[in-house]
Image: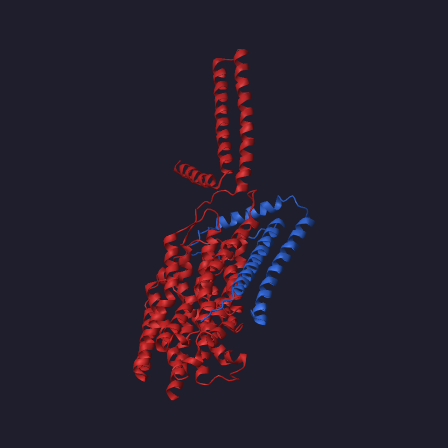
Length: 113
Length: 488
């Protein structure tokens, strides 16, 4: 009994998943970086503290927000540059969303064959 | 024919029960990481997972076709025997699932299902009833390759996420913003779970329907193995319900047994899991979502600086994975032996056994014995396979920057020491009071000592920017200094 294995299919899955995942992560990370550059540092506190998360006090959270504000005030960029960075951040997030939607469409419409 | 019809009804009931336990068991696959990083409240996470599992089940039917039209050679086995074998296989899968759940062993619902079906067919009929080519290329190889693939992708993605957001000026890096992103990536994982796991049950039910001729359509058309719409709706609904109810266990324990996961790491792990499962679903590979999620968690842990593998834990997880398929096959084979030897009585005994198992499972879940072993699933367990230092060593670039700083400081201190020494000499020459001269000499000594210290620090950074091992050494040294300061 001969068994034929489609090794190309495995390679395709690996390539598609690698490109998809890395693109999404890279665009999102770049978006965050641009957001920081634009002086809008996101400070997102945990929604709920599980035992895996070091519990932050109100004071810690306020300190983080203050630090972010200070960094934004001290930014050497002009207002125009900041706006540009913000637009770039939004662009990165949009590309990230497009990659996700594209991936789902590929599954729904195409299939692998 | 009537017995076959009765068995098919039993198969549908049992398959839907399996679907329910699958959702129940796997909520944590999608939701362990966002709960661990605090991206979502457990209640929201569970509701989201249930809804997206429902949606995901409608997205693709490739995996279902693999199960219903590839693994078992239905024309060879014959239409009277096959429903009984599927029934026996399902019993094998459910029993093995329950055993591993009770013992807290790592396992995979999907492999239990395939193991049960294959074992029952080989023993109840013969090895020629199995399409080994399909089993190898669409079940066994994906099972071995997918977790490694997911791990590699998660490793790369974690490196990218950290690399692109790293700052060297000590200003906020905004990495907590990955928590927003995690809401989407964990949703994608839940969606992909629906596209892969719900499909397996659909495939089993469709296979049973085909054997008794209840499947509509033309048997010669390639569309014949597509699941009926009511099957899709039933399976989607059941897995969503299972996911939702399974989530309450997580809420009760609120993340007990979770390791610390940083938002950037969690985001990368979830992206990798979702991408791997979605791409595999498109190709009809029936893989274990639990193993893929575990592979991603381990890979993303290794992507963080200074992490090492705990081989004992990793080995235990891998052993559980390897054991599932043959073990479930063995139980399925035993159930099939009963059917073959005792005929109708065998089916009845199997059915009674199934009811006993289901009732046992129900009673067990009513007992409020939720520990980290059974609450957060294997994905959380795999988090323990990677050890992370509290303070990771400096990056190469950080070492270079620190080296420059240390060199500058050493130069400054050298100047200061020289000036202090000159001042002391001058004071002595110009006839200052003994106390003044003594003070100046002391100041010069202090400056010289500071210069020596700065020189030493620069040498340490120089060594660090040279090699990885040296960098790790400095991280330890840093911790030691912290401890000393803490003691002071």
